[in-house]
Image 1: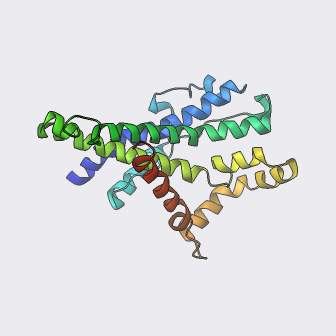
Image 2 (image 1 turned 90 degrees about the vertical axis):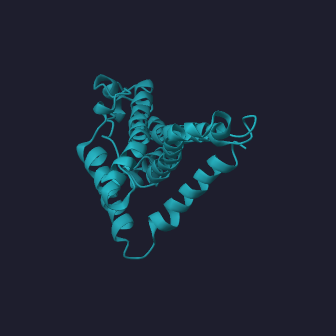
Image 3 (image 1 turned 30 degrees about the vertical axis):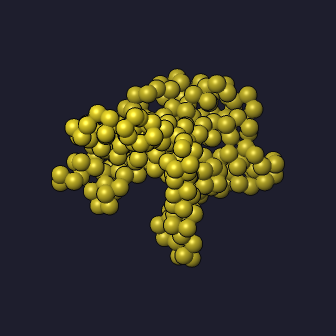
Amino acid sequence: MNEIIQNISIFALPFILAVTLHETAHAWVADKKGDPTARQLGRISMNPLVHIDLFGTVIIPLLLLSTTGFMFGYAKPVPVNPHNLRRPKEDMAWVAAAGPGMNLALAIVSGILYRLLYSPNLFVGGSLFSEFGSSTSFFLIPLLEMLKFSVFFNVLLMVFNLIPIPPLDGGRVLVGLLPEAQSRMVSRLEPYGMLVLVFLVFLDPFRFGLMRNLVMPLVSVVSSYIFGEVFI
């Protein structure tokens, strides 16, 4: 029980920020592109309560955390009326890309903060641990763990959502980029997209290993790049 509480204290804030700002970004871009639906529903907001989905934001994360020690989930999708957009096909691609784009930005910011706090090259005599003494570790170690999780989770959310299967963001970006005939063909998958994802992620009878062989390796590469190469 103590371990679960400790994990919640580290994972909860990065998780809430990641899913909240992901949906806020969708809502903000949709409003800028001409559709006020999300704004009128109060979805351009930093208040997590307006974005919470009981199943995706509360039940699934807590179940995963208590059984696997890891947290994953999603927020309530932002409603977008394509007919209000100035250029429906192209603008929907921008709206869809905004969520993963926000997660990438959050991952980069978290990586910068992590390296600022931890890097031995940025402070005379070493990192903040040696600069201010070991007593700071009581606060810094949990903060560093939060920042590490923030990088990993935001990259995971970005990569997973960019899978080119509608209704995921990657599928909607693909619909916006393809020529009209191919775009219509891909968009017809949307009613079945979640079933396809469940099939590929959880059942995977063909041993393709979408998460194991594609998503997680990409998450590892991008996360390592943020931690290791970009900010040295």
